[in-house]
Length: 349
Image 1 (cartoon, rainbow, N blue to C red):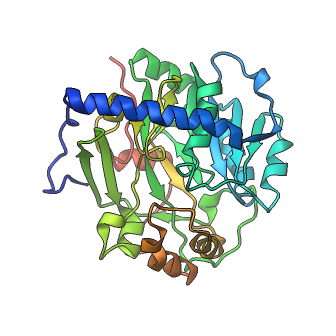
Image 2: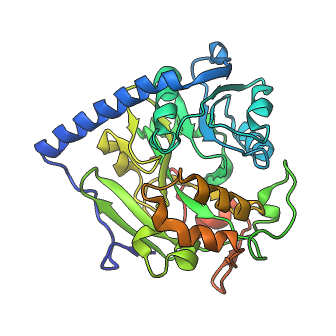
């Protein structure tokens, strides 16, 4: 992995001075206030949060039209030990909301408001994390992300060991899974393991550097960088995330789950091949529905801060781009990703 602009390791995260710490506190308060106000945008469809017990691992997700992915998504995270799912449905029209409302371990709220104006859903999820996540280990993911960890131990066991190690959060690399055929081809049925169709991934290269403003990692590279952003690498997707956190109501996600405030939490993930315990989020974006979703996303203009800058990306996905390269590897197992240095096991003394 290439580490830093000069190819060297990024080193430790920058230490903010008093003025920067003060500005970070002000920003965190503003984000918490936004989340508190965002509660008015949410209408409960099925609220079972009274059944949440102390010590349960909770999952938070904001989604729209994910009926294709939800059956396997739920099965995967239930098998990892998630006890309750807290869901924001942003105007699904494919039955996603109704299907989720029928699940006994799901609480779901609906909103028809702008995803982009709500900081890409983080204001809505921020309220739910504030209201229901305090004191719990909380996993915040997208509906097309499947967390795998070294050893695939249950989340209750993993989080207990993280607590023993004094680590209140664990980071993850978002790794795109790729089909062998051009995008849009193949058949996938709800409930099937996406890895049966999305068979490959790029093991790198990656570029990593720390951003001084909030002390967060900026990790780019991989397949989308190679296929869609070769001429504009600065626009390539950010691949580092902090999805698993022992939540405190004073915390706030800053940029999706790529960074957090207080900024000290960002130092808990230094990227692939770093020393920090970490996982991988298998990204199932490129199932056969990806071209139609790209056309819809381009029309809605609800993703990205400047969506017009990504028109070429949407067009390429909609046209059925070929994602594989000779450097792509066939996905075998979480152990393979650990062997490749893409995630690291937690080592206790």
